[in-house]
Length: 297
Image 1 (cartoon, rainbow, N blue to C red):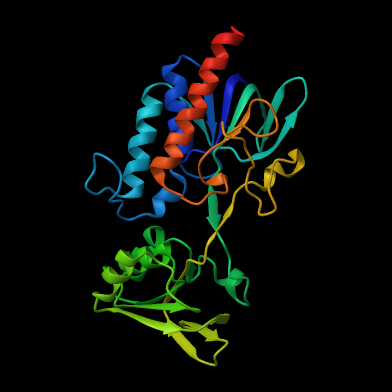
Image 2: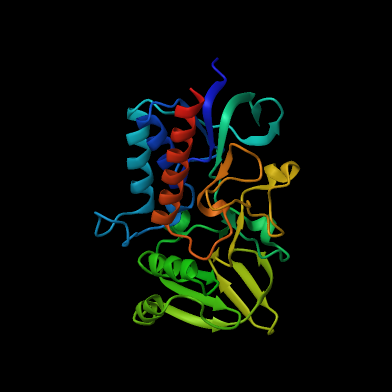
């Protein structure tokens, strides 16, 4: 098995796949390592309406199109979880199945849903509690569901679920944080209602009971939690390149304090998390590596 590559890309979301595309076109051998499924969090998006050249496209469709493009070009994608990166005379990316030696690493691991951390949440994950409406919404066709949160993602999830579920209740703590156009859109949907409250615990008999700190009980078939994101970067803790929130720190060229180790996409702490921004960052890093490769050779 070949375990030496010029570039190892950690993460097969839009950023990782864009980096691979640009590197491949430059003739630089690279591999993508992904612990679960291609696409990252865009597969949670039921309807992307701000991606150039498409009036509308689902996140899963976009991910599959990108995956086909890079694999048709010969880019290798392996489904292995990266456990650590060791920096010595050479860079070693250690996975659940082995290790890869490379000159450059691109971290494109994105973010994951934040947990509420309340009683009953762990026990009911995948048993009535979900963090992805697009993934699990079909399980609740003609049933009652609750969306916890008031962010863009929460409102997008509620809108998607409204097409499947009988009723959708948005449970929010303080105020709406979603963009104005989403607030206007969601208010026009008849089977979506709003309840103000904070989750205290979950329990389940035939249905899920949500107990709130305000003393109310909400009975529902399914719960979808959207309360924020945290970076997928714990495996980098030994490298001293993370900020106090766990995001990867980089300079203006998207390189960390370790020469040849870059980070792109949602693994970075920034104001805007957008698909095209992540892709632009990945292209920038790939082009920088291409320039360095020419000099190295």
